[in-house]
Image (tube, rainbow, N blue to C red):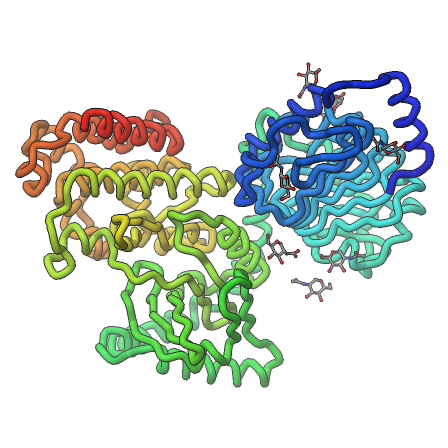
Length: 604
Ligand SMILES: *[C@@H]1O[C@H](CO)[C@@H](O)[C@H](O)[C@H]1NC(C)=O
Ligand SMILES: *[C@@H]1O[C@H](CO)[C@@H](O)[C@H](O)[C@H]1NC(C)=O
Ligand SMILES: *[C@@H]1O[C@H](CO)[C@@H](O)[C@H](O)[C@H]1NC(C)=O
Ligand SMILES: *[C@@H]1O[C@H](CO)[C@@H](O)[C@H](O)[C@H]1NC(C)=O
Ligand SMILES: *[C@@H]1O[C@H](CO)[C@@H](O)[C@H](O)[C@H]1NC(C)=O
Ligand SMILES: *[C@@H]1O[C@H](CO)[C@@H](O)[C@H](O)[C@H]1NC(C)=O
Ligand SMILES: *[C@@H]1O[C@H](CO)[C@@H](O)[C@H](O)[C@H]1NC(C)=O
């Protein structure tokens, strides 16, 4: 806690100030900026109002005050998502503790240079990337520095402040020698474990003798202005590092796979397309795998991410009754009813991500699972063994948007314009969130199509949730990537760089599909079979029928909202522009759709 010196300084300071009627505006402004930069399920917006400090007291969640100054910020496990505002928490001069543990904060680590009273910097279990700022070495009162479980890279600076008595940088991507300062040598191995390539004591890894080529230096720290670029670079390097060893494995396996492919294909067809094929069968496979695994000492691991769900373990999952829900481009999805009565959806991946390393798979799945949003299907847990990779999702009684639009068995009443707009808005919201929450991903969703939008209906109307998102990172070869909907984007076809804008393209196609009621190409549901050029379809739909003709006949019957519908078409056209850089960002798209909705309700 605060030591005597700090108390004394604060006390002297308070004498100077005499009676102050309000908190320090700079501190409050900085906290407001923090509040508005991050999203949280914990409703900071409703709570952080008025002054943060009233003498020694605070009415703000997570804030501790002393003499009108904010001295502690403790927002552990608040499910904060986003980036810290620039220069945070520089203006909170008397901060002694900054605890942001266990959130989903991205970006580079905060600049703590001016905070001479800072004793506890607890930033573990987040998504910070970039290197550890050299300035942290200058924090002379720092007692506790927790940075574990992030995506930090670069080298460890030579911490040597005597005050430091707790330190943890494990589970990052740090490299190079651990500085042999007396302070750093106080800490155990577990403070440094599970990094990319650290060496030197206390780890058991010897450093190679210094060579003329210097290791990457911490100067490579991304500047706050350009975090995404650098982050992308870092992610690429990590991906390459991870991919390198698996390449060797790949070579060996390819030979084996070629040998087995025919037999497998036959069996697969027999198994998966037969109506009665369900959980039992694949569960049996899994059982036999785990038996063989036991013999060789490697066993699969089920990781429960969302602990709010009824607890189940691998055995429960294996015993579950299952029915096949559908076969998508990446694998097969089952509905599994556990013995407790709980129901979950289980996705079993095809071979395509067979070569992903376990550590990478888990790290990636953690990242996806932490992206919680009402318009995204929630990930409950995931399973990894060398032979099987599963993702367990919440089960939603639903049908896909594809079925809703094109399958007469699902269609009840005609879909009116408001319903269609509401569905599109939900999709835009979910996708905008995903783009915001996974900024470092090349294409955060990568498989957006009407088959991967689940529609759930209740008394309030239709609700949409996106599923099957975030797997491009787990796929290393182009052949498999061709199964994803982004393969229909012009940049993929032309072999150009993929960005978030590939998702925007797919979103544009969804809009067109929803307002025209036409199936892009031939059938977006069976992507493998659709080789026709979707962008051509888009142009044809728009150029030839630029009139009410393009609208679904069902909507034409009613005369509502045609003007707004053309505005939506306009958005769809921009989203499907051949040039990715001319397409709008998803947050802009969402804002415009909201405007359309508002206009519509004003006209009613
Ligand atoms: C810090 O406070 C000063 C004085 O109130 C203000 O001018 C400045 O903009 C603030 N900076 C940040 C990053 O909040
Ligand atoms: C904020 O939340 C805390 C704890 O839940 C409560 O005691 C406090 O009154 C709230 N403050 C405001 C301004 O609503
Ligand atoms: C705030 O705390 C300090 C130190 O404990 C104390 O001297 C001061 O009187 C407190 N102020 C109020 C209004 O309680
Ligand atoms: C992180 O926070 C969540 C809730 O926000 C909690 O359920 C979980 O146990 C926490 N994890 C750790 C490692 O503290
Ligand atoms: C951190 O903040 C200090 C003081 O505002 C500034 O001098 C320094 O350049 C900043 N460091 C970085 C890396 O931005
Ligand atoms: C460092 O953090 C990791 C992950 O949370 C934990 O397993 C390890 O015990 C910690 N080590 C120390 C010394 O705190
Ligand atoms: C972390 O490192 C320790 C020791 O090097 C190792 O036993 C453990 O399996 C690693 N954990 C993960 C999740 O990789």
